[in-house]
Image 1 (cartoon, rainbow, N blue to C red):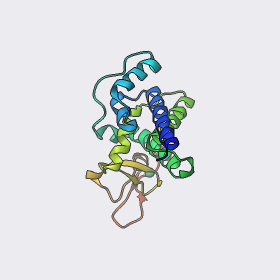
Image 2: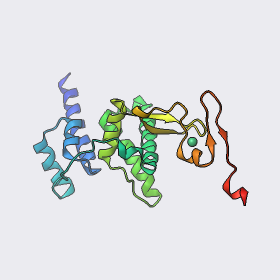
Image 3: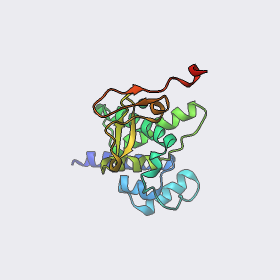
Length: 187
Ligand SMILES: [Zn+2]
């Protein structure tokens, strides 16, 4: 690597670290993503946020993502992440992708007057879980939306909550069908 490229890569790491910390990422996660020292990141965190970095456990469980509301949010994050990843011309590394997708998610929630339940730490763990294949994305047989599922509980005929609630059901090898009429028509 030429000196100029090495320098650019280093600057990029500092920039990534700053963005991650601004979004509330914990130091061990920023450390893993940027390879900058813990000592430096703690100082940077204090400088940027004006308070000592948060302590406590970093996410390490997939269960959180499988609850309905969290799953919807995490699935939306995956779609944003994929959308950005599909355009390699932006030249984003994994860290920049995480930052950009998470910022888009946060803006979408802010625009709707609410806050995202998923922290950037959980977004980081989500990408890891998809890479190490403890979580996967399954396509709903009815609405074609993609949702998170545990690899250990693969469903060939996956139906999302909303479609199930609307009375859809599906048997192996068959097209999904609706067994209940819409509730408001029954009255
Ligand atoms: Zn569906």
